[in-house]
Length: 398
Picture 1 (cartoon, helix red, strand yellow):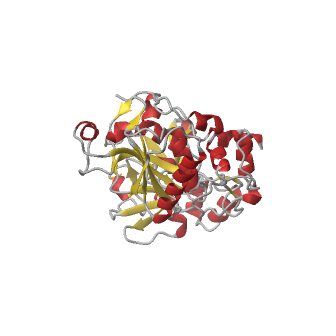
Picture 2 (cartoon, one colour):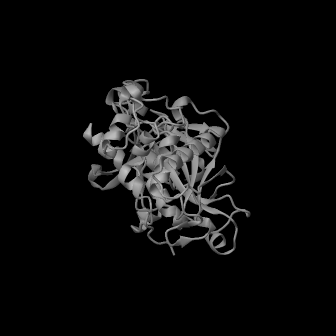
Picture 3 (tube, helix red, strand yellow):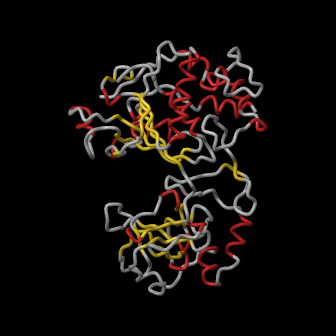
């Protein structure tokens, strides 16, 4: 059974990882090595815009960036779905520009919440494998994998390509209450969702063919229908519930998934890992947007949220599966992790040496579904140090 852990990193709690980096000479703009400042002040100094390093520099962290492209979005923080698509709402001007090239019928349906005649849509009887994207902005919305014949006269799907790609709202038009579905990025009308689906989801997404463009499997997606470039990192820090929970909250983190790595067997179960000496470590797979957060900032967060000085243990959780580890995917991550550990060890902040393993990443085996988003589901927690608090306070003070 998982339990709460008590961190021994009193120095980290008091000083903050930003202060540790400053002490090590990696953060203060003047190169001054001081620790007699508050973590918030040190962080503010580190985040001065004129001092920002390249986002490709693995040894430095940078703050979130905002989207300011006037043709695509209004100035706001970029929103990325768990499928790694930019779903930041487009500006009204940009939507109007995209919709201006639509034919009259498609415009009526997508921009004025119209409905095409039953059994007339060109995608109703489409049985090819592929992806259905928004006709206006190109965001992937539904997959042929989830399409079924409903007999209603409109293309029907039991689930979305990604739930974050489809927005839902109550529609009370025509004297009835329904759930309208729209593209989450451009707001275009797609159709309605009904609670009478034949599969385990119990949902029938009823779509207008005119709202969709079909891209057959094997065809190259246009740029507007492609996910953003992402990078992946793997961290093991004891119970993966807490590690996953805090990484998921990180700015620029697209997804965090619990699983098992660095073991001797394939496709292990939680029971296998706990009781049959498979050698796996409870690990969290972090997919992130490198333009929004750097690998170094992830390292900072990782060493804040767990104790890297206890071997095969986090608090009362004891066993090889609870070991501290960084599983790198390329030489840049390896070098950055080793340098970070070296600096942290030499800083004197920790009472004991770091025992975190740094190894080349092997196969990641996803954990059982009940482990995913465990803290969000249950409210239980096992890691007590929130690594993003200093960031939030620094932004609020600016």
